[in-house]
Image 1 (cartoon, rainbow, N blue to C red):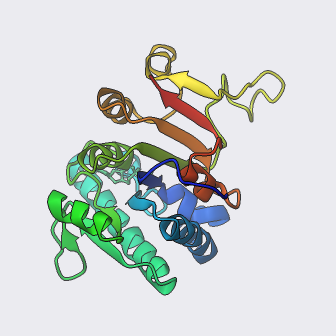
Image 2 (tube, helix red, strand yellow):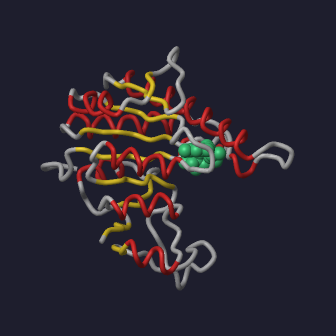
Length: 239
Ligand code: UDP
């Protein structure tokens, strides 16, 4: 990716599932390092990068056992995201990128609490900010947390780094002959057709704040940087 970046400030959502790589559980350090390397390249081009990290590689509140209350299970899930956030910080700092973690659940021995104006200040000062603990509330997702923080940070775009290269008409694994990838989609069409982009709360927040969402494959080398630079890498969901 060469040229001038299209965006000044981006929100990158990294799912826990992506961090697990082919292991399916926990963290694959090589995935973490390659994501960090691309963030470093975007950062070195002057792009302000905020990252929201998921936790599905360790825990999903909805999938915990029956005997545990959903809210409790969700809090455990939020704690899982903090582990990922701290590892992302370590990977970025190893590459010389100044990074702060802010958590929506206070844990001040390991990270700053979320303070909106301080987070913006970090971005302006050239620090990457990694948001952990989701929204701090059960019954939400880290996609929603990323959309919320994107709006709060005035990010110009929501980059949804996933394991697929965009949004399809139907499941490309089940229907390889008929599945077609969308280049562009409207928020309205995503809602009307129930297309799998992210949960409705998250997409609604992006729509209401006119933040385009780019769904792309984070595991293909160079894609995070290309997406950050504003190149076409997947499906763009917008007005
Ligand atoms: N979670 C939550 N509130 C939030 C964000 C996350 O309760 O604001 C919990 C929820 O249980 C979720 C888990 O944390 O299953 C891990 O987050 P998520 O599933 O969004 O991670 P990802 O799919 O991105 O890895």
